[in-house]
Amino acid sequence: MLITLSFTLSALLLHGVNARCRSQPGQPGFPAAQDWATLNETVEGRLLAVVPSAKACVDVGCTPEQWSSAFYRDALPGQMTNYQWEQNYTSSPPELCLYNETSSCSQGNVPVYAINATSPQHLQAGVLFASQHDIRVAVKSSGHDYLGRSTARDSLLLWTQYFRDIEFANSFTVGDEDKGSVVTVGSGVNLQALYQAGKAVDKMIVAGSAATVSAGGGYTQGAGHSVFSPVYGLAADNTLQYEIVLANGSFVTANEVSNANLFWALRGGGAGSWGVITSITMRTYPAFPATLHSAYITFNSTNQAAEAMTIHAQHIFDLDVYRAGQYFNLYNTGVAGQESILWLRTYFANVSGDEAQTAVAPFITDVQAIGATLINQTVETVVANDIVANSDDTGGYNIVLASRLIPETQYRQNTSAIGAAYKTLLDQGILAILGNLVAGGKVAENANISSAILPKWRTAKTHIILPATWNDTVSPSDAVALQERFFSQNVPVLAAATGEDDSGAYSNEDNVLEPDFKTTFFGPNYDRLLSIKARYDPDDLFIVRAGVGSERWDVESGMCTI
Ligand SMILES: Cc1cc2nc3c(=O)[nH]c(=O)nc-3n(C[C@H](O)[C@H](O)[C@H](O)COP(=O)(O)OP(=O)(O)OC[C@H]3O[C@@H](n4cnc5c(N)ncnc54)[C@H](O)[C@@H]3O)c2cc1C
Image 1 (cartoon, rainbow, N blue to C red):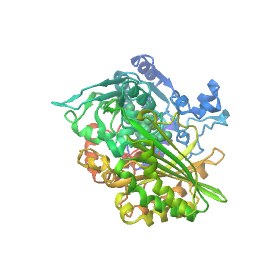
Image 2: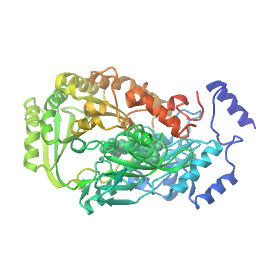
Image 3: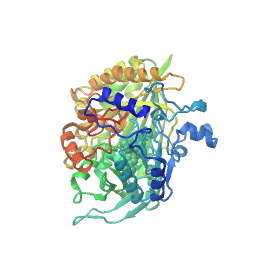
Image 4: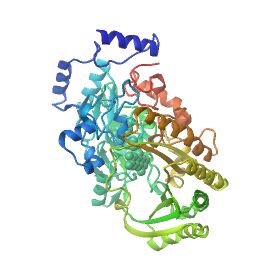
């Protein structure tokens, strides 16, 4: 009773008299043990009590290698790959469950229960239960989200990791139109599994570099970039259909002719805001040989590194004729004489090793001319399915990102602004600057596709990411301060490199601290997204930070409207 009263009072003080608050544990509306037991029966015994990953790890005695393996972690319902999202740094006292200190574990931002769903019916039961009891839901597939959108404290988790079907077809009809060769994948299928399944039938899919990101989870809802995007477009451009459980419990198909508005929103309108996807159907392409050119180049000063990145910007159009994609990651080592290292990986479709080397050579020659050292370069040609994805991803540590889409016009007209941003960021002590040449070419040509993709993707050349990390010895308040400092100091520098006042960013690889996420992530699409949200999720069941409609909610807790 006391708990209820104090919660109500604090909700009123914090959120105002008209605030709507979801049910929380200890409140009268929150499901009782019997309600959870009934739900468990409805979902065929697939309801799980969830614990933070550090506790789960200790309980089964996982090894340090398992702790940091995303493949291993994927089987833990409470885990987030970037595991600071499991902690609640800002509650008083902070609620933590840290890898090296599990003696006093708190639940933090980890859901209370999860439905380990394997059928739409399980998800429908979960959605109806959450609506009936007015509790918060979280939707998760891999838990890779850099914005922490797939976990929520005091929530019911709708977990789709085990929707694992993969089915290829040579034709796929939407309305009267045959869209050609496709693959339909469950929303728990990871990219490595998808690439390998494609290889077995000589087909390739447009997808990213992570082994364990789910193709049918958050990936295409953000946009979905790939090093082969300059050839084939964004993953969302290649998505033809979703099957999805909606907030009202219905299970529907969304494509160009059925629920066309929802289909428009799902392709780029932001992860976690629309419903629970069970499968996605994507276009496939005949498998092709691809060449990866890889080089390590070191710089002896931040001046030299910045000059090299201006040269890199000037040479970026060398790759256009091949529609090559590239990761150009600059690491700030701070080691005297070798201040920074550029790891350059360039991906070519249907291009020989010799041609690839010739394409990258002018850049390498020019940076050597300013004194940079080429440590080594390698060339490898294999089937494309084997060249994109990592063998595993790293999890169980703390990291946030911030990013910007850099317009092609900057590369044509103002490369010195790009180099200057690198210089300032390096001098600010940024850990790394992660470059992605994943736009231009087909991404730009696909501007006519009607979807919620941020239009700035169509005029961008690159997507540049900044990371910030910290370890568990940093106190919760310092971790919060570190993130705020990272965002307020470094992001304006990157934003300035765009030459735009309303610069845009990829919503899947940016930061919840974006002050104007509506413009930065959704641009002119935001109002239409809001109206589609009103139709498909009128009671805001699916609210995530920096997502459509989230401005109506207390962003940290998602528990009360403001
Ligand atoms: C190592 C690594 C490499 C990456 N590489 C790339 C890359 O090359 N290209 C690229 O574009 N992105 C890349 N990303 C970013 C990636 O696109 C996002 O992290 C994406 O949100 C992951 O989606 P997920 O479903 O796997 O993760 P989750 O954390 O499970 O979910 C992410 C978001 O999607 C929602 N969601 C999850 N499952 C469902 C579902 N079934 N139905 C509805 N909503 C759901 C969640 O609520 C959340 O909002 C990378 C991320 C990592 C960690």
